[in-house]
Length: 320
Image 1: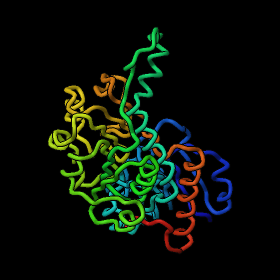
Image 2: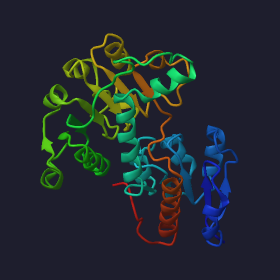
Image 3: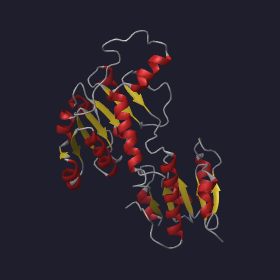
Image 4: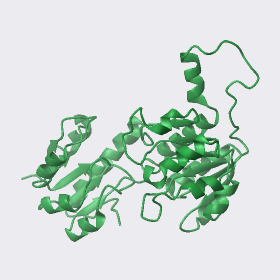
């Protein structure tokens, strides 16, 4: 009998087709609504593998239910939605999807940086709202990107990809990371900086750190106070790395110039979120890796990890 795989969100049948002879798939039948907790636990109880999204809380209770489970394949690079220690205690392999989304996420990061700097969304709304009556010298004037200093906090794969794009714009590159990245220093001219020094010098501060106990709310009031008043903050990592109240206050008081955000502390946010009150914020619905090609590659990597582990082989991209 083929192993049972539970997929926590409706995905295209054509992505599953190459694996149909290997697995018995069960799948939540909605694409845009997360699986309810009680359904998830019930399905986990008889599944050999689970393919999940960041919306699922894969915690100790989940693993206590999942008696037959051998692998959880998370469709993301980050895995803060999974209790990895509990998984290890239950002998369950956890995998993620690094590499395949690096360039796509870097594209979005730089697009968000440019849109925020040049007030692109605000300018588009200006026309939609029929406000454009005359040309004026400083109408919707924003900030230059070329020749400025970018400060990348978290110089992993995506950070390096963003740095390559920044280099193409003639930007000076500062970075802060748990460890020095000599390759980025040699190939991209990136300069290692301590956190406070980076905040004080960068025109654009870009957060690309994973969410851990050490990085939770690392962008707090002190961090924003250390930034230039002309600085622009970009977050494409996890919302939990930012104290959103402190960010709101800094933006509202013009202590920093603007922010571009793809992630939030509690997702999804509604149109009532206080950050949406501000004109100097561009907010996106967590679409960093959202190109059709990349999302398909992420799903295929999840499925290939499931295939490997359930065939008694090593996972391709295990979380260590």
